[in-house]
Image (cartoon, rainbow, N blue to C red; front, side, top):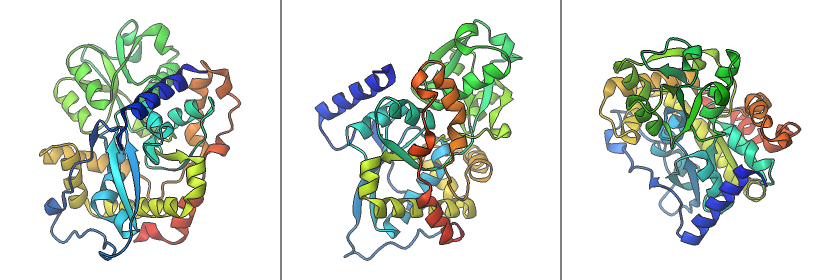
Length: 353
């Protein structure tokens, strides 16, 4: 059994042994409805007597990549569509996969590389939307680093091995004729906040960053030596994923979940004051400028109106992972994606709501 799935199953065993309803490191913050902009009203919810379908969904990073997910929750769109969604923050893609394997969550917002690694080793997961269809990063480096070549022999932050940040960093090094493991020192961490602190503390010399973290980095002398977001490289960076048997048995629930996300995305793009207040709450920030920049980057440049998931979004991850696991090379991504739910939402014009 491949080491990735071994680690996932090990985490799943620990989670199951601990019991409890959720493996989350922390739960989502309380609703910021009182801080929403004047005139920015949440979606109308069902009547008090309506029966809501309960489910648990996770996200792996407090990042602008999940902005539309956050707005969907805080704007009341899940409730409007008859869902009671328990939003859980579980740091790291492997831990999210473990929660899926342990049946402690029904839906995980995870990267395409994690989906590939789990499925080629026997999991049966399917993705049916992606909230971040391009790599949303700039490659930030310490002042002494001017080019990718300057990183030879230097420590580089990569988040979790096999995760989105690791994959895109390897792609970047490959573009410049370098191999991350041979030419630099990849340093795994536990998410974007840890990665940023490692840079600021000198433990690493370069790493992928996105707003608002990259703003703090640049105020401390770091600078971008590559802009991956500008290149619009396809990826499934926040893929909406679940076990196939659960999806097959709950297609109506999945459809309402996707309907909610599409409506929440429309709200995000139309109502910056509300979305910025949501960001301030999840980032626990009162920095209007940083949250505004984060909104502009993710809502206007990265987030699609319709979260289509396509085979192209998995290509680079598949190529990188195949170098270490031959099973990945012949894996058929089309068997692990289902765009029918997004298509239905688009056909009904929910992105115009």
